[in-house]
Amino acid sequence: MPNEADDHPPGAADHPADPSGSGPFDRLRLYGYLTAPERRTYLAVMRLFTSTLMADLGAGEVASALAAAERRGEIDPGESRLEVVVDRLEQLARWGNLVPGRREPAATIAEFTRSRVRYQVAKLAVRVQRDAEDVLEVAEGAREVSRELLPAIEQGLADVERTLGDLAASAAGRGPHDASARGLREQLAQQVTTLFLQHEEFAAAVRDFYAYLGSVIARYDLAPAEMTGFKHMLLEYVELIAKDVLRHSEPIVARLGALNRRRADLLDHLGAGPGDDLAPRPGRLGQLELMERAPGRREADWDGLTGWFIGLPGRPSEVDALREATSRAITALFANVKRVTGAGGVDPGRRRDLLRLAAWFDSAEPEAAHDLYAAAFGLFSARHLALAPEDDSPDPARTWARGRRVDVEVNVRSRGERTPGGQVPRVGDDPLGRAALLEEEERRHRRRAAAVGELSAAGADLAGARLSSDALEVLCELLTLAGATRDGTADRGVAADAVTGLTVELEPRPAGQVTRIGSVLGDLELHGVDVRLRVDDPLLPQAEGAP
Image 1 (cartoon, rainbow, N blue to C red):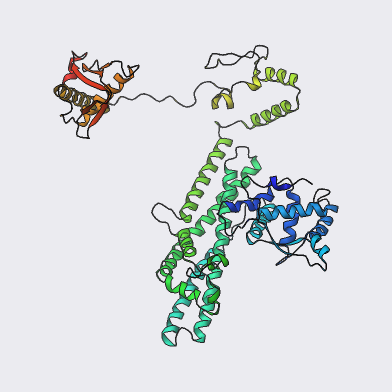
Image 2 (tube, helix red, strand yellow):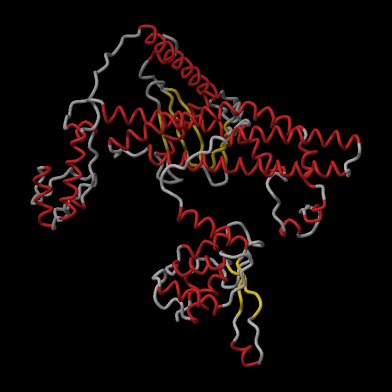
């Protein structure tokens, strides 16, 4: 049998993985069996290990179970052979999905040499398999959102706040370790766990529903019946969800604010009790890796619950995101309805014609496809008529199917009209705007003339000058143009502004010499060149000053 070590993702180690101790990206190897060529066999094996609690199976037991699956046609023939099963189990162990354990019992040394390792499923692998089963079984349509969970969340927060107050009163009266206090702590733990499970279910349902909504809302091929059903769902169901969320958000936000002010006492009560020794604490070495706490026992859990309903600067809440998504969905629905029913939209009959033409192309032979294209679009394949390419290299042997695509305007594509749609707007005359533009241009001329005069005065001593920002901008502009005229470091460069008459000359200097130009923004250093300035007669005399 070929070794399957090459089937695992690139970069995966050839030894059993330790997902709990590896990096977060290294855990992605656990998904390798879902995309492997033998994924049907791997899925059957993982279903066998995750079907019971604390499964401890050997290759023989797995092979016996796979034999029945092979007879039902669920896996490929030959996959239930013992040597094949051993390879599959070893590959799953290399990916980290299975953990090798003890060897099968043997009475003699000969049996020990033939005995095989027994395997157990890893914790993270159970989650991966559970998520894979959910994806395989979930419906592709919209997921119903349990709207009754929102008032339950509001009531749960009220119960937690009330129980927390009873605990404070009990501790003040009879002490925190009284029998009634222990009962209240247990009640508080039940309420917090129920609260977070309800919120997790509601948030997951909302995410799934709006993910489906986003995938459908972008479709432009909805049939009239689909559009009607989608419109009913969007205008009634989506609006109903958004209103429920907004109605219950205000009391939920108020109760979360009160609980967040007492969060330290709340988490302290949730960590106290007989099971406190099992709770992971940062001060105990390794405990954070040995146990995953129930929801609601960490600061991060309450931060996530608060962030779902209450936004922060730069991070909007999920309630705000839901309101925005609902608004975008309704706007997109109205646009699609207008496109389908409006006079300017795509003709419904044209869609059927194009689909029929595409079916003809799909079933036609190459020669018939050429004739069909010529008949449908009026371009004959003998000359391969097309727009000239930009590089001026025509290729007469290239067919239309492999040629460059041409963008067609919407009017031509949908209605066959080449005239632009809509009314051509009139060009309005704005005297105030024209006067403002002329005034702005006059100010620009004054500033540039002042900058040129400043450069002319400082031309003899640029190093000691304190050029303004405008003068430095004009100088850098001409320096760039002068540098572009030089082919090498030993060449001379010249650039002139015909409007102002300012000319910049770059003379090569020995290596190591530096020309410094002072300005209010700092010193500009030019290595290997000398800068000379002169002002000739300008092309436009009014540019030297205000007109």
